[in-house]
Length: 149
Image (cartoon, rainbow, N blue to C red):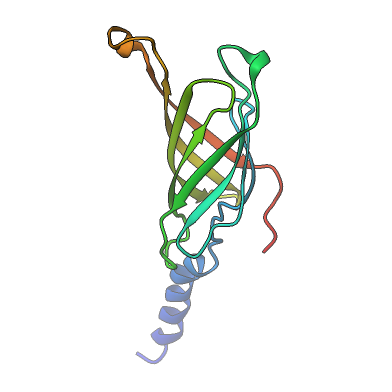
């Protein structure tokens, strides 16, 4: 039984150690999505709230694109190394607004990735056009600059 103890200790460390070294995914910083849009998230406060800016690469009228403000909230738990979050973008160049929800992940290569789903609400002239006023999609964001630890 004494000889089995070192083997069990090594085995248990091998199983537990990867969880101990897992990097925490941090929202703060500069991000680019799969469509080429850029987003900057400023510091997340103690309540989980944050602000920032969003520069979309896609629009119905690309010549009118302007950097737009965003406001959001991150789920606050010290134990969660891959937090969920949501934010709203109030587009400065159109009568529309978008909401994003997602989760911050660290992939198998140690890279931070934001997986999101969004709704875009367009302003329409009357209730009969309501059916075409909401768009839905997904985006994957990757960090532009590695976060310093």
